[in-house]
Every structure is written in C-alpha cells, then in structure tokens.
Image 1 (cartoon, rainbow, N blue to C red):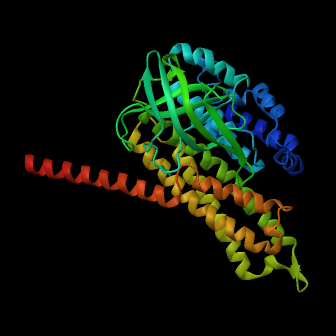
Image 2 (image 1 turned 45 degrees about the vertical axis):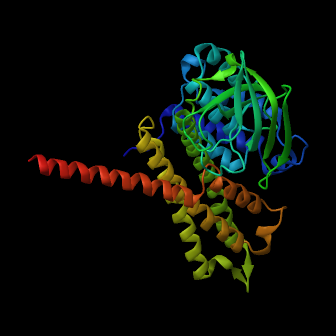
Image 3 (image 1 turned 45 degrees about the horizontal axis):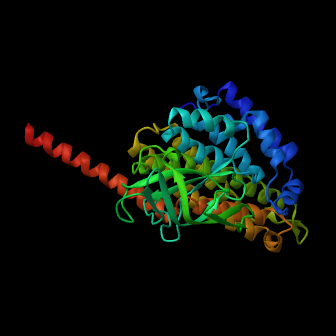
Length: 394
C-alpha cells in the first residue's frame, strides 16, 4: 500500500514543522505554560493565518477540505513540539460535532468564526462517574417553554479555560447509561448559570470543571436532533482519538531520538553508555515500538471511517497498540536518562507526562483492547452464522 504523502500534504507537513521549529522551541514553550493563561493567543492567530484552523473542515464550510491524514500530519508535528494551544478540543472535536450535527444556519454562522480564530469551543461531556463510557450522562436538561434548563456537573473539560463557547451534552430522556436521550447544546461560556474552575493538568495543559445551575438555553441552540446525539459523538470522538494517536506518535519520536542522542553522548568509565549491549537492545526495542505505532496509526487513517464497525476496530486497535508503546518508550526514556529524566528542567519528563496523558485520553489501553476484542468477536459470530446458514441452505 502506498503511504506516500501527496504534494499538498508534504507542503502542509513542512509548514507545521517550520512553525514548531521556529516559533515553538523548548524555551518558548516552557515560558508559555508558566503564564497564567497557559497558552499564547498570538499562536492561535498564526494558526488561522496559516490556514491550520481550517484543515479538517470541508471547502463548502470555508475550510481546506483536509482528510484524516491531513489532520494526522498537523497533530504529529504538534506532538513533537508539545504544542499547548487547544487545537484538538476546539477544531477537531468541537468542530467535528458542529459539522456533523449542526443545521446549515448553525454551521454557516459558527464554522467561519472557528476557522478565523475568533471563537474557540470546548466539548463539555465527561462526568466523574462516566470514565470512558460516552453514553454515561447524568447532567439533565428539562424543557420549559421555549428553553431548556440544564443542571449538573462536567469534569476535565480539556481546552475549557481557552474556550469562548461550550458544547454541553445533557440527558433529555432515558436512564443514565442509555445511548438514546443524549442532546448537545451550544452555549456561551460566560452565560449566567455556568461556573468554571480552571486548572493545569499534570502535563501542563489546561482543563476546567464546569458546574451548571439552572442554565437556560434556547431551543435554537440545540445541536442536531433532540436525544439523538450519541452516534455523532461516538464517531467524532473516534476521529479525535486518531488525532490523539498522531500527537502521541510525535511525542514518542522525540522521546526515542533524545534517548538515543543521550546514550551516544553520556559517558561512563570512559565510553558512551550506548556501547553497552543491553542498552543497545533497549534502544532497538524503543525503535520497534515507535515504528509499529506509526504503522498502525497510518492503518487507522486509511480505513473507511463511515463504516462504524471498521472505524471502531481500527481506532481501538491503534489506541491500544500506541498505549502499549507509550508505556514502554516513555519508561525506558526516563530510565536511560537516569536522574536527568525526572527533573522538570529537562524536556524528557515533560514528553513522558504528555504521552502518558494521551495514552489515557478517550480510553486507555485496557479499554480499547476490550472494545477491539468485542468487535472482533461479534465479527466472528456473524461469519460463523453466515457459514452455518449457507451450509443449511445447500
């Protein structure tokens, strides 16, 4: 199979690589995360000027019409620079929900403001009890006249502190763990009834806890059909998971390369520690884990994402495999760097923390292994039943 990038994709990769190299060196990134805001609005404006905020959107919406491969290219380079601006939460996740569920009027009015960098959205979906189950929603929305009244709590809303608007999932009908009855609402983050608590995560990104108390939302701000949002959430989160995998692969490359360089230059007993055969074996194993991760990422980008079964199987296979690589490459990078690998002043510890967070985001290795095995088992049952029916018919 041909995995070569097109000319346009190569230009995109070179552009993002140049941005990370020239505008996001390690010292600049460290200064950004230490500010109160935790990100740099000027970088977001530059993303808009470069067209990066329009990459995933179709041309009919004013975007560049990029594919999942184009998004992968951007996120992999962002992973190499540990870019902290909320590209995935706002552009890929929230933008994907808006284009999947929004009416023509909503898309025409919202998407251009995302592409221009004027507005930033965050998806307030996770709740303390839900863990990785996208259908486990307790936050309630009750209809009162022409408005919905929302009450409840959302946890770990990534990109929340930088957002101007939120997409909030709420239960309008059904039981807590039903897939039916979930509705999405578009709200201004500063609306009366919303209280947020912003905080830095362990990997120096930013998230929010969101409390809703009698938040009034017009029926016009419902995104999609009432009670029918789950399938779109499942699909868009899967696409965002591919983006997360791409970012993780970028971080893994830096961990691998920096560890190899360190072992070449760190000397003990008069020679580089990289001459030790056991260390060489570890470095080779790190290389293998990285290459396998990159290969399965490419595989996930080539499947038909409109086929729900194939999409879920590919995404879970990639997330589980890359999660395993994150643990192996990250832990070996820390160990081979010795005490240097643990200190905040050295970049390896920051890449390790970010990679670890990416390994958990949208489901850890165990969750996706279980999901993959359930899908595969269902496929086997279907094939077996089909063969049995064919034999019986003949």
